[in-house]
Amino acid sequence: SQQGEEDPQALSIQEGENATMNCSYKTSINNLQWYRQNSGRGLVHLILIRSNEREKHSGRLRVTLDTSKKSSSLLITASRAADTASYFCATGKSGYSTLTFGKGTMLLVSP
Amino acid sequence: DARVTQTPRHKVTEMGQEVTMRCQPILGHNTVFWYRQTMMQGLELLAYFRNRAPLDDSGMPKDRFSAEMPDATLATLKIQPSEPRDSAVYFCASGLFIQGGRGETQYFGPGTRLLVL
Image (cartoon, rainbow over all chains, first blue to last red; front, side):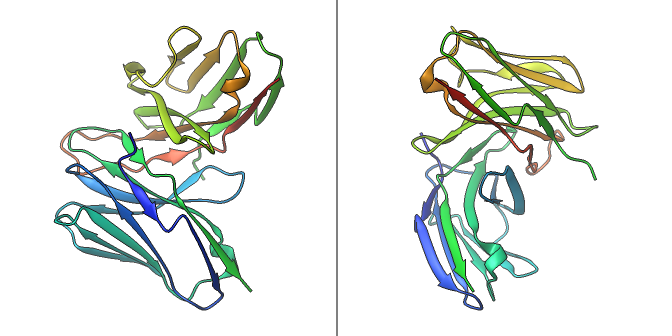
């Protein structure tokens, strides 16, 4: 069964706007990761947040994690057309290498 | 620039034929994963290896799929016989697992797009 569920399924914005994607999960986790997938390509790791962290930044990306609500959000600020892609959250458990991926949010950034 | 490579990138075959997909993980990574991606099911883990030993292949249909790591630089995924429902994109990913670590990043290859007619 899917551990992470992204919301919304699709998001369409204009360049310069911020994009927020959410991820909910069901069981306890050790870490949560966000990946990006451009059309026809493999997934690319964006950011990892550990279960004892609440917020993390990387460039224009900001990730929050609320373990009490079992949810995470990915914020992309000042979006660009090149940010157009699908974004996946993936959850990992302690002692395990495997990640469970959600079905992703498809982001379209129009010039 | 270290990256995971996969061959072939595209494969079209007829039902019943054998399909072999290959993956070269990033040098130094000790864990290799095989995933399948479809529109309906999303990204599914098929199998994974640690130090070339299979740790979990519960996601694979055992009767037709097999995964191996002949050496540290090569992972293979075979389907025999292939069926139309196997049509999907197959990804290999590698990572470095550290005991007691707090999560590892997975590095994905470009995928093999398989179409079984």
